[in-house]
Length: 200
Figure 1 (cartoon, rainbow, N blue to C red):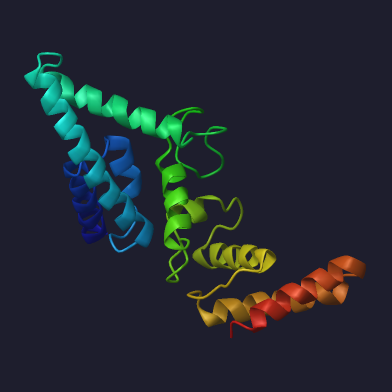
Figure 2: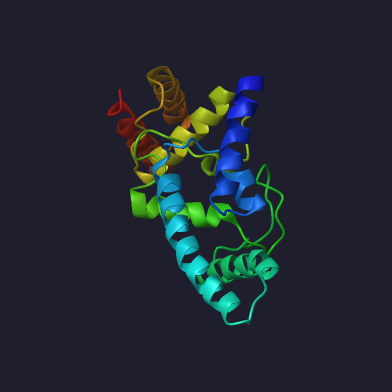
């Protein structure tokens, strides 16, 4: 546990050093450094900071800004980015989601946009903390895994990266539900089960 906390703190400090805000660093430090979307976010932040730094230097040289203004101006710059890209909290926290106020900057909204650019959070079998936060039922790791599989099956997506025993357990539960179901609901369950069978 201590090692996990130290790794998280190291990731947090690295993000702060790369000009992420404390809120961004706190949330995004939950992600492994190898996460494709996070790598792209960090690369883009470097480019954005370098552009801003040149702009700030010019403003200071011309007497429009003071050096101590740079930090607050950078925060304003990022706030504009979040507003422009609509990376805002839409409805406030739900369930186990991070406690962020409606309308405030949402690093996970930014992350979701980048997952689309990089091929999705599960492109390499990785499930993001944001995805797990959407799960509103199930208390154990197994429960959460089964719910994740269910959502993937419903959407027709791949569950690559999920342990096969978990997939088999969900198939067994689908079979039990199929016995009791009728009509379209039964046909939907069969379709979901057959999709899962392809993953074994």
